[in-house]
Image 1 (cartoon, rainbow, N blue to C red):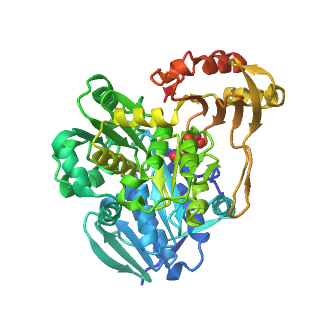
Image 2: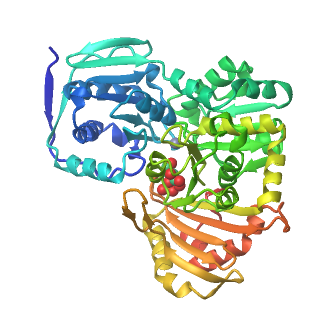
Image 3: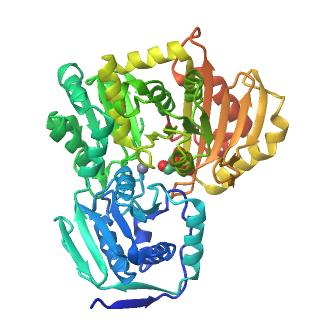
Length: 545
Ligand code: G1P
Ligand code: ZN
């Protein structure tokens, strides 16, 4: 018999509401006694019929991953969960988790990751909950979990000895079956059903040099399985391909600042035809060509315009969606294809209902996230394979593909400026000032144009009619240029202010400007309006995309 221990706790202490990305905190905080356990207890209490259900548990391999999995198994046994599935070595990317939940008809999945935040003892840790459609838990559920975590006075745990997670196997603990499985196989198989691996591999072997950067995080084993084992490329095509607890000191956020080593290889040294990177848990992607960077908003538009070249989407797509701050480049393509284009708030969870209802097939965010109806998460390696498939079919360079796209549809110059880890009161002051100014901005002059609209974005979900308010401040000009201001919901230090700039140029205008130059009038006027450099005491943003 497995003995259930009831552990009493002095006071409920989840100090933060779990958001879209679950609960993200410093590793040290997660190591405080009972902290992880309480959150898991609250998660399990939010489910019904655990004794008949399967739960998936995996993570991105960061510091604390295996220990957390062992603890969660012990709590699952105490709750008599029917079956717990854990990948070998505890490594499972976020999109692979989403796939596995759907394939196994699981009630949900617990993903141990702080996504693109640094790992290690001095980095961050996180717990994310996905539900039975494979997507992130909606707010109704995270609110319920938060509430129940505040009321808890104890949690249940069984002191079972966890088996070696580096070996496959099936075990039985009390009423719970534990399966340790191959975490790569199902995901790679899914990719093979969408893309033509032979065609991509022929193309890459012949005339197209390729490098993938796993940033020492979870996608290393997946990329090796797909590119080296299945496609037969050399081992060197995957760099930083071993999952390390501290990501080898890298900050696994695939952008020009934190993946500057890759950017240098492609943009300065021009050593490869194609380069790509993914983040800690494998849902984000950055695409680079020889001498060029693909803005994620453009990537979404190009993906949408080229579905006929990708086996998985040859039959056509029903519609697309983008988060509000993402540029409107994809809207132009959708209009051309006569398919609907939805504008949702920031966060992948808002795509879930649209995907489930088959109103959209492809969706994306400016924050290096693109995906489709194949899972319910954004998917980094999927995006990389998608680009390779289109290039293999068209036999052209990344730069040619982008130029041809802009020549056809026009170019939405776009940039995001992040002011990371600034004092919260300063971020609130800047945000509050703009909120107060909004109603007077309409009709006034801004960067040489008239302000057509100035508001705080709110979204009504077409499926469940739920309303999400306060989703970002927007200034829209009469030439459809946009400036958006948001406060990040995923940072763990101070506050992060995000500014987004967009301006459309027709195919007849200059399409080869540096975006910072094309957008300068907007950038300067926002700084004048909001005094950002002065208030933050920062001459430049921390990250410019
Ligand atoms: C950020 C991105 C957002 C993404 C989220 C989770 O959120 O901006 O698009 O969905 O991470 O990956 P933010 O920090 O802006 O709230
Ligand atoms: Zn991520």
